Length: 341
Image (cartoon, rainbow, N blue to C red; front, side, top):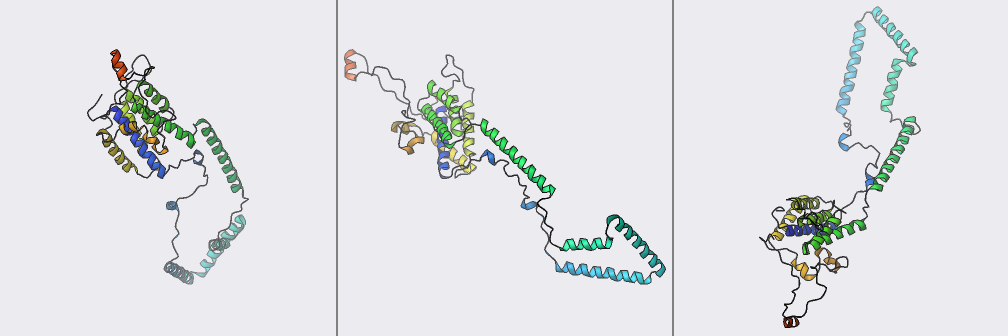
């Protein structure tokens, strides 16, 4: 629909979509994320899905284990009973020699080592000494990472443009003012203003719409001596991106699918002539400033009329006496479906 729309109507459609987004943001403002929050949390957290869940105690398994140990003990005693005493004595002596050798190397008897391991298993976890070298080095590394993160944030903020709410609002209002002026009077001067103001905030819906208004004029050098035609489809592509920015904008009360449906509805109203700029021109108030009760745009008239002659026209009677017709006031033509001029 953006590619078949009259250029002036297409800009008005984008203007209405931006206003629809602003109405949403009044109810639910977007929460801007501070760049300092990126990578600020250096603590490693294990997600719930990765945590190991220990099975609950099962008395049946405990009973089966004890019964199996008792059976092993019974079989061991039965084997000793049928074993030749001399061979049994030799084996016990050899095992004891090996255990003594183990104790001479490791300082503990193997049987005592097994008992000690069992005590650790049944005891409470041993607390880690906070003064251990591993924890001390980990704290130093964390402090170094924190300083690196702070330096990176300071560097990024020093080169990025200001994102203060008042500054952003002023840029947005300036862009909407430029778009409305162009819609009211799509001439070379207003097209140049759309370009200049749109370049200040091209990553916002209002700023990109201001650039799309400049492209819709049809001349890339509106204030120059030679006409440079705008590439075909550039203005329509810009409008599509404006709608996409509005639909994906954070905050608001609608989801992406709901926003696209609302923007399509607004487009149908504009293209069928049900919604146009004529009522606001007659009232002398721009829609994006109606709530302020002031129809002026930054202290200027809401509508930019055509250039008037230095000397005002004479009344009709006096002009008729001299044989010259009166000069009519400027009239802004209402766009209608099918009017592609």
